[in-house]
Length: 154
Image (cartoon, rainbow, N blue to C red; front, side, top):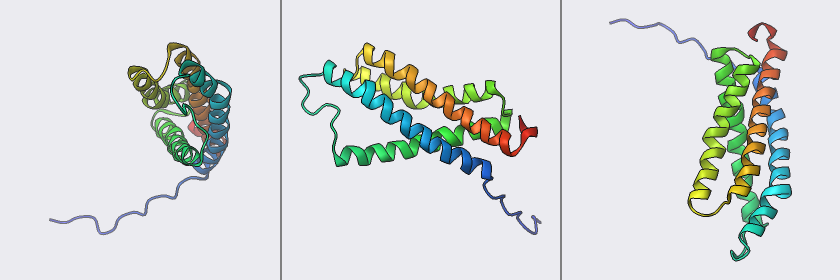
C-alpha cells in the first residue's frame, strides 16, 4: 500500500482573520462591559435584592470575565469565519453566523439562568437582543475583514 510522499504544509492563518480577531476583541469587550454595567448588573441587583453579592465586582469575577471574553471573541470570530469560508461572505451568511453564535452562547446561558430562577423575563428581554446585536456585528466585522483582503470571496 502506497501513500502520499509528502504532506502539504497547512497555509498560514490569513491576515484578515487576525484583523477580524483584533477588531472583535475591541468590539466585544466594549459591548460586554456596556451591556453589563448599563443593564444587566443593575437589573440583576434590582431583581434579586435578597441575594447577597449578586453581580459582584471583584478580582476573581474580572478574571473569570476575562476568560469568558476570550472564549467569546474566539467563538465570535472563528465560527463566522468558517461559515463564510464555506458559504461565502455575504451579509446574509454573516447574519446567520452571528445568530448561530448567539444561539449557542447567549440563548443557552440565559435559558439556563432563567431555569434556575437566576434571571427574570425583564432581564432576558434586554440582555438577549443586545447580545444578538453584538454577535451579528461581530460576524459583520469578520465579513468586512474577509472582503477587505479578498473582495472576490464575497
